[in-house]
Image (cartoon, rainbow, N blue to C red):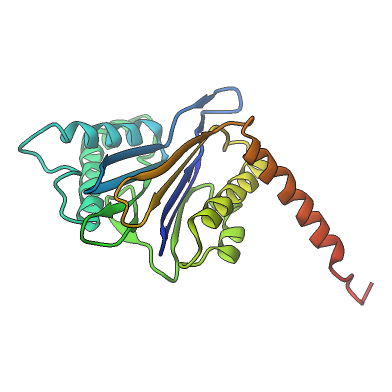
Length: 242
């Protein structure tokens, strides 16, 4: 399992992904769930993946290979982010046509989900969720984030904090708190993390950080958030019927 979150804000985009995959409690591995493609000054694209690792790796590899083909539709030829999301969906369907029947024969479900976001010159930053069927939805100003994987543990803090006007630094901080809450509650999500920030109209990645357990800022977030929650809980009044 995994947990990934992407946020599309007035100030730009924030992406965070974990790196844990598992096939049972005794078979745990680390694989990155984030891929980036960019032509600085023209476009920047980030993709997060969840679900069957072989499917998501196939989709990512095909997307990268297509960039070298002059006569092929690819991420660098798409005129806007909607067409980027449509291209990703078409590649997902291509992998489905190739692998779904064989996977089904072995009792394996065709399960994959992608968060695809970025900005192309001439339009604002955009963020999409591409499903296993190749269809997709786009985030809005009312709901400026998309989660995939084990989303339920990290959703409450994002719902309370993140708005379309939230700064990139606050959004990144909230994403890390969301991730830490998920890691504490679910063993199938784990470090290292990939945190990527794309500033609006920069058309390039502003920051891409790999966060391990030794990261000082992550440890500060992890400890202080727990302490402040306990303090806030202690300050709440007791129910008057007890």
